Image (cartoon, rainbow, N blue to C red; front, top):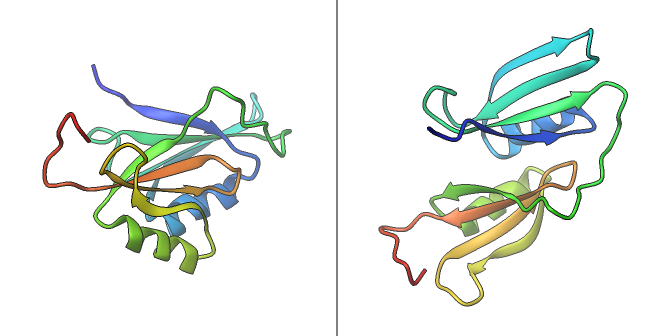
Length: 134
């Protein structure tokens, strides 16, 4: 077994695709309209679905926005340099909600940004190796 994707419901599909591709550097892998169900699915990611976990962006044609809910946490993306990743997001008009720095109670460098619908994305700075203490 393996994880295939995380699904997010989005209010404006084009705006969300633009954020994930232009700001976070993912690729649009596929996009399908389902007229009978009045929804569109778009899959974005850093690699092909056969090899990588991806995001499924679901747009219900009759819904402009969603409540984020209290159970949803975030999407985590590994980056080489969390500080540089935050600067790149800001340079492209994205919102950084927690600047890069060590996590509380640990050494791992993290940051948080939000997508146009308010979903949180955590940047986790790549390490040489992982340990249970981090």
